[in-house]
Length: 245
Ligand code: BV8
View 1 (cartoon, helix red, strand yellow):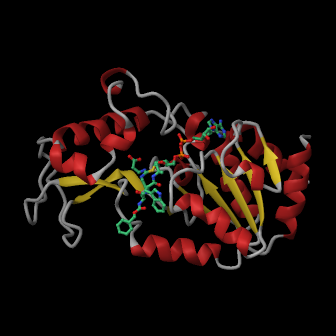
View 2 (tube, helix red, strand yellow):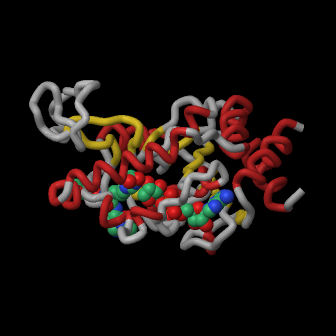
View 3 (cartoon, rainbow, N blue to C red):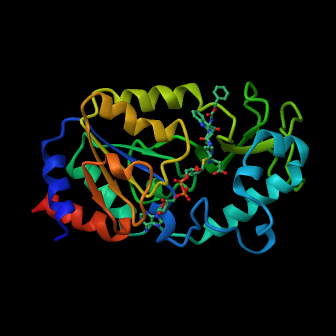
C-alpha cells in the first residue's frame, strides 16, 4: 500500500469536514482529454482558453458552439472510471465528504456521487445567454447556436467561461462546504485556475491538512501534507479499501 494512501485514510477517518476538489485528471482515465491536453483534429489550432470566453462567443458564436458540440460528442460514449466510482462509494462511507468539481462532464453524478458542486458548470446543459431569461431552445432548432424560445437570444453552454464570475449560488455552496474544512483533497487538477485554485490556500490558513493525488507536480504539491503521485483511478479504489478495512 503506497504510504500516502494509508496516511490519507487515517486523516480521512478522523476528519469532521473533508472536502474533495477534482479536475480534469479524474476524467482522464475515462478517455476524456484533460483541459490542457493538446486539442486534436479540427481543434488543433485553438487553445481552450481562447474558446472558453464570452469574447470568443460574441466574436464567433458558431465556432464556440461547435467546439462544445464536439466535446459533448466526445463525452457521449464515455463512462465513469474506477476513480469516479470509488469516490462515489467513499461519499457513502464518509457521509461528511463534500465534492467540488471543476469538471463540466457530469461523470461524478453518473458514477452516483451525491451533492456534486459543479464549480464551472456542466457542458450537457444549455442556457439562454441572457442570464435573467429561463428560456430554452426548441428541440428542432438546428441553428448553431440555437435561439432561445422565449427571447430569441443565442443559447450557450451552461459553463463558466474565463473572465466570468462563478455563479453566486455555486460560490455560496462551495463556501459552505469549505467552512470548517479540516482535510482538503485535491485530485487531478493542475491547480492553476482561480478562484478554484485558491481553495487550498484558504483552508490551509484555517489549519486544514491538504492532500494531492496527481501523477505530476503542481503549484500545490510543495504545500501538501500528503502528495500521492499516481493516477486517481489507481489511488481512489485503494483509498476506499483502506477506509473500509
Ligand atoms: C473569474 C469551463 C473573475 C469552461 C473552465 C485570480 C483570481 C481570480 C481569477 C483569476 C486569477 N488569475 C487569473 C484569473 C482569471 C482566470 C484564471 O484562473 N486563469 C488561469 C488560466 C490563470 N479565472 C477565471 O476567469 C474565472 N473567473 O476569475 O472571474 C470575475 C469576478 C467577478 C466578475 C467577473 C469576473 C473562471 C474560471 C473558470 C474557467 N472555466 N471550464 C470549459 O470547460 O470549456 S476552467 C477549465 O480549467 C476546466 O473547467 C478545468 O477543469 C479547469 C482546471 O483545469 P484542470 O481541471 O486542472 O485540468 P488541467 O488539464 O489543467 O490539469 C489536469 C491535471 O490532471 C494535470 O495536473 C495532470 O497532471 C492531472 N492528471 C492527468 N491524468 C491524471 C491526473 N491526475 C490524476 N489522475 C490521472 N489519471
